[in-house]
Image (cartoon, rainbow over all chains, first blue to last red; front, top):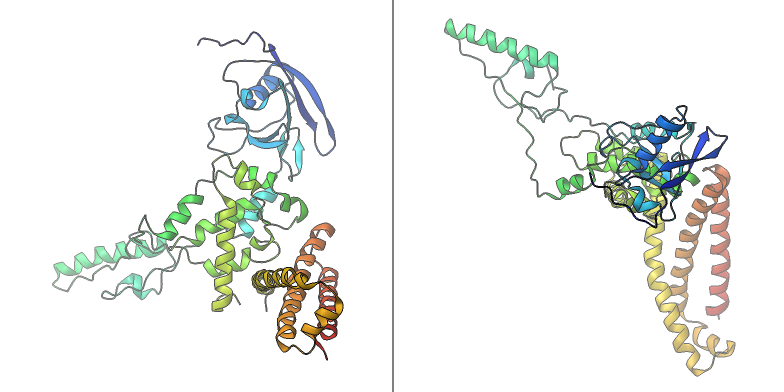
Length: 301
Length: 114
């Protein structure tokens, strides 16, 4: 690789790194500059060459896992995809842990609060009950409504699927003896038009990597500790637009109110700083509209 | 009524009252600009407003919208400054709303009453 050198650029970076947990201080390190150097490279250099006790978190190094987010020069960023060139205007970096989260040590924050709020916002997919089966009775329909996802051809729970396979086998056996073979009714895939409004809304918000940058950048999170935050609400919005999901009303109840979407002041810091270029502000606005519609229709009791 | 529904209704009420206020403030500003052309004296204003059912109705709507909109916003501001929502915050907002409604109604009566 040809190293591009700028004769006016210092050979080293002056890097201030937060050391400690809740109480601590910034320590200063000199790190050699390299071409195409990322902030994560800088932190890794400090940990491997200068001070092995430095704690920080990373995994994929290519902007997929969302684990390396830190505060760089006062702004939350994904460090693996942030080039030093772009942020160290005066050849200095100040690197700290993400804001609004408890610091475990050095640059490592405790993300439990962040992900607990995803759970409180009902950020898990809840399969809708399978559609009513209209064909001839089968062990699946006889066993009552399936609890499985209707996005799968066979629908039902593993037990129900096993029962259907067993019945199918039995059916073939009966056919040999002359009895009619029972039809195994199978719930079809949900067909979702890629151009539909709901699908496009979900698409626009689906690529969240859970890095916590939006959460650390949100003023409302600082003012209202119960606030679910942009990422959790963004996740709720994707599920709200998923026709396969069966918990829309419960989710709207979970994300409505003072700790939910209505706490958002539309500052748009989350949208400005999301490294995946998502717009949680737009997702939250969508949730506000959905809650208003649920209020008017009486769906939200 | 669940807390989520109650808080969502407050949000909806604030948005609806904001829409009413947008129209009311427009009319109010236009009226002021037009009214001062002939000289802005108390006597002149009262001569137009005294006994006017239309102005009483208009400002009645205006005051009600203010009394709904502002306390809900104050409730959020106070809650964020205090660090959480409590009955005290709701009480402060309620009192603030009642004060706005009483003072506003008193002003309407004074200006449009005969």
